[in-house]
Length: 416
Image (cartoon, rainbow, N blue to C red; front, side):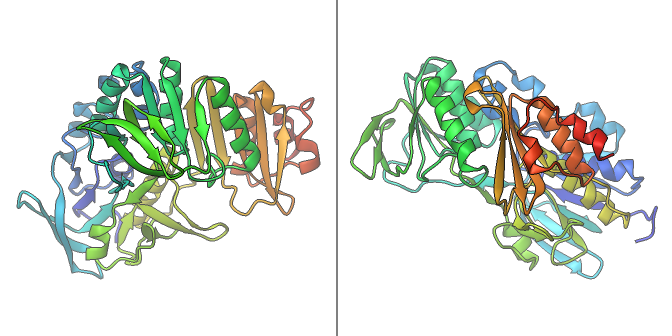
């Protein structure tokens, strides 16, 4: 559409991605109505701290908000909270115009549509799953409930050895709880990192007092009204005063499916954030990116939500997509800061830089001799150097990367 054309945009999902999309539309000069609609009663807020600072009690809820109320007024963003869209259709599929109906019966018309609907935690439908004290962690209410139970608990079981589960485990162990992590796979973070990193993370948690059970499957929960044990398929029973389940995210695709958009483990989008109907964009955790080098990817990170939202806004306005840089991610687990940059899909070599036992090292991933990504543990200089190299499409020879006597930033100078 022509630049400056006055149209109304509906963004469904008041998430990090949704707010960034609305903000970028205004930054790029969109003059029509921008409506940001979300199902929660709160304005958009940060989610990563829910399993970190908020759960530890070091970050209060009033510091989670992404923007002040004045920001929305100043930027002409109509924020609608506490509303769920139940029905949606395009009245003009070729232009992307249509209307949405909310649960309360409200009708919202739009000329442009963006889906930033996120997802919901994958749940365990096992015997005893309805007992009090079993938690999933996605929003502030989840985190507040978990924190209250955790404060009163002595024995805490985490089901799932992913990032959220390990962050919660670290917070509980630091608070003096008896913590057990149960993971079905043979190693922690199996889908995200190399075996050497999985081994390090497991050893680091064990050193801090957390019990790690690998190749272990939960078969049910026991208790009268409230959970008091987690049952494993091999017959073991783990006493538990509170449980958190972190076994992945199910993207919300119902609205996309109503619109006939292609969904395969998420809303499928291209590098311009266009869905299978190019007039409709999507961004954030709900999407699967058809990446030309790495295949289908679903990146659950703040950085991806922000970058993809900026791209989606530019696409809606017919602008060239901005350079969003290399994907990155971080995880705080006790006093360990894991920083990751790049995408390691298809790696065939991992170069260690430093000694994992020191808890200050990096793992660099390569494919056919080309640098793909880095996992850095308490090594911010390595992380930033590799991230900048990847941003510039540059590499480090694998045979040189392990030499800790040479700072990785030297390769920035050498390849400039």
